[in-house]
Amino acid sequence: MDIRTIFDACHFSPEKMQKVSLFATTELFLDLYCLEPGQKQKTHTHEDSSKFYVVLEGHACFHIADETKDVGPGQTVLARAGELHGVENTSSDRLVLLVGMAPPPTHA
Amino acid sequence: MDIRTIFDACHFSPEKMQKVSLFATTELFLDLYCLEPGQKQKTHTHEDSSKFYVVLEGHACFHIADETKDVGPGQTVLARAGELHGVENTSSDRLVLLVGMAPPPTHA
Image 1 (cartoon, rainbow over the protein chains, first blue to last red):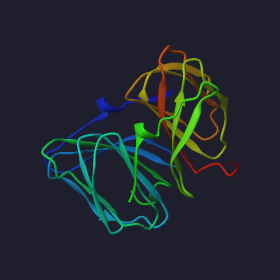
Image 2: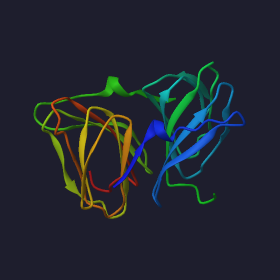
Image 3: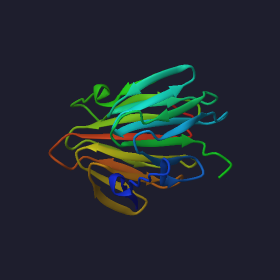
């Protein structure tokens, strides 16, 4: 059975946000994003994929379409296909996000 | 911005497991499954979709393909397309699961 213990998979780097793959199939991926204070995922768009983020630990500043909002633990955010989206750790604590996307991008 | 507070969305019923939709797009859905002790989702298969479960609260007994395992908070389980899968709350406490599937089923 494919089982992952989420917090065991966390990995941070002082260089940049770390993406850790939990599951990847042809239909979806499920990742952890681990952000030290000040780190971010630049805003970008997937024309044909939906992505959701769940804040597991810390606080995140999300940019989705033309909105910017602070989001805390236990909250989930959706970026629909075609919507500009990005996230930044503007707090002084580490940020851990569970991130799913479907379908996965066709590039690496 | 599409934001949901996960535990505010929890809803239990003595009748059966409750499914609460958090997000639904043409590419994926993200649900909460809320199970009182003894409640279950019967084993079934989606031929063309992957599904993942994240245990947010409580303990779950998963049946995936030909395996059965107890899974606890902070763990995530994958059911690949074509794999028989189901889950049961065999504990004496409530169980809350975050469940994502892609692509969504074509039937209701």
